[in-house]
Amino acid sequence: MKHWTEGFDDDDADGPLVRPYTITGGRTAPERDDLTLITLVTAIAELSSETRRRLRRMQPEHRTICALCKRPLAVAEVASALNLPVSVTKILIGDLIENGQLRARPPLTFAQAGGFPDRAILEAVRDGLRKL
Image (cartoon, rainbow, N blue to C red; front, side, top):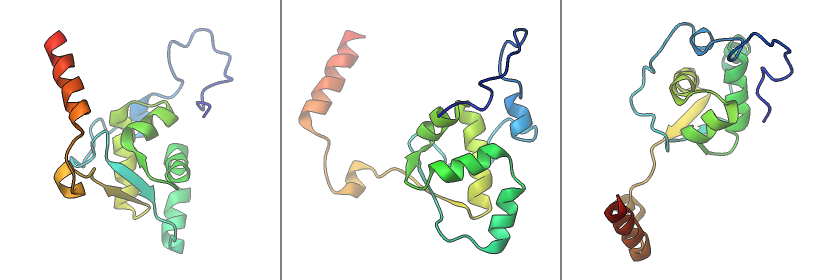
């Protein structure tokens, strides 16, 4: 996905033209503490007319997140697709969850999934830790 600032010819600009705190309305930390890098977010398919109206008044990044999340994506994947810091992405995702436009599902632990980690994975982790 192309970042929205691509195509601007401003040689003096060191970074994006709009700073992240502008996108979030000055907020610097997410209000939700349950969003991790691997939390899955999914757009709600059927939106009420009120919810659609609220979405039109939001930032373009909010609308992009809704479009991206038609299939479940991790918070880190959304941040990568938007080319925004994860902290900013968490704030935007929190807005959409609060407005009823997204659902968040915490990742399943091995115990909840009914299985155990593969022995090869555990050995690879052990070997990697030993090399540190």
